[in-house]
Image 1 (tube, rainbow, N blue to C red):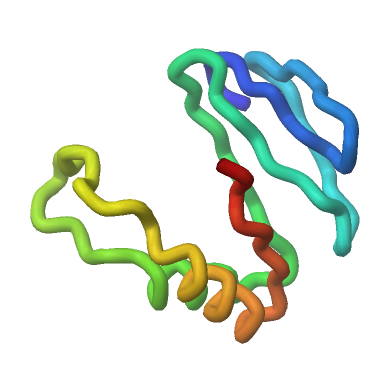
Image 2: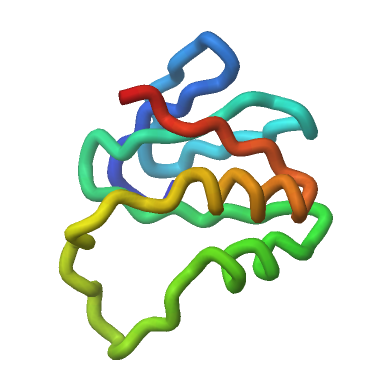
Length: 95
């Protein structure tokens, strides 16, 4: 972590993380994070190739600024399907 604070969910555990924290998740580990403050994080995925997933599900930026929040929710069914095509398992968030 470069700065800020996150709650890192690892399986059923939650770990608070702040500047300087680093994590390694072996393949098959159920994990996600939630920013509890504005945060800057550097993430590496090994082996490479996750960029193809993001290219397929992402939308090209129209400018070098943050876009406004979307008026529609993400298409989670599509994201889950594309993730599976790239060897990842993504769970739809509970509402």
